[in-house]
Image 1 (cartoon, rainbow over the protein chains, first blue to last red):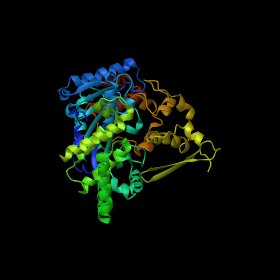
Image 2: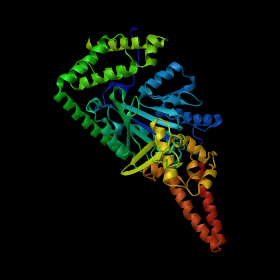
Image 3: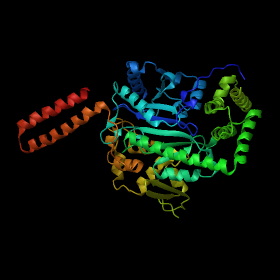
Image 4: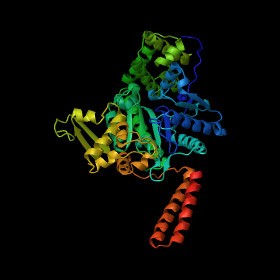
Length: 349
Length: 167
């Protein structure tokens, strides 16, 4: 393993937020657009240039944003873009095209995407379940941006967005949540039904539908119009708390009904991660899921969530290549096994 | 079961939407599903479904007229919107105002925003109300042939519009 390759991690991986044994992160996204200006999907070069100019001006002339750095996506290397995708800061639709910017605040407290599907998308991600705090931060950022920009807004429909699924409040609140016990008890299908019936969406964070790699799911609000922002935040917080309770009860049931079985499962997964010479991405995510559960059930000691959260990032292809300076795809599984072994070892010192 | 769109082929794709407590079902054949843009990802599915609902549940009598509409600012057409599921600019919400409310009701179960209002818009909204009220009075004044009053009201409207436009 290359010595001391320094990697800066986003703060939210530190797992110090509330309920971070089950809720990995909370995130809030606010969509805003400039008034009477072509949305990104149809804007021509001149219009895009104008939009970028106005937004950059709003950032540069406001002391609130003085610690922000503006990154033009076109000028970033493929490598950097890949790393950002793996860290879930941008998605693949944002990689190409003119006029796309990523504005990052100091310590990655928040970031602002310029010219994604909407002109402006404010994103705040924090560890654990803390959507109310996140809303306060995001709201302030919105107010500060508004000082020097005219947002598209209609009294009837609220903030106007490119896609009508975001109209009104323009906010998408979501939580990234780890549900290994509900999965073991085959309760995920029921959970999906319950959540979808009350106007929220749930999906596997990695992977499709109920098939969630690493037992990680994302719950988000579907409705953005006709509710106040606080109502939306409250609703998703309440639902998440309910899901947390379901998961806690499921974990209790598992450890009480068959302690040997779960203990064995966790230790086997730990053993494989410690000794395998080659690990593919999916199986590694699933082993990490077992370790997360193992920490909460007190089966594993001297290992913490933040280490595992960071592992999710480290084991991805772009990060492996960056750390080991390797170009060859075929070695990735070997590199992955190496980095996991070394990371777990660190903790046990 | 027969496809609900073409009425010919066997329906092999069945979609059920549950919004609050209301359940709606749609049954289609593969080629109609493809035509409606049904893709694999969840997001596209959600919106294609809206298209289906619009066609089946609320058949538009004046479809011809709607197809002709283009946004006054960005020239986005109804078809552009249906294909991309994206509007072109803020003005689209005015240009397509005939079908916006039913679209929003299907997506959000609500049609009116009750959340945050940008602080700049607070005064705009008051201004718009005032302009509307004065416009009504202007109309009445013209009907009553009170042209002096009408002229004054027209000046006031112009003043308010200029004031708002400058902001």
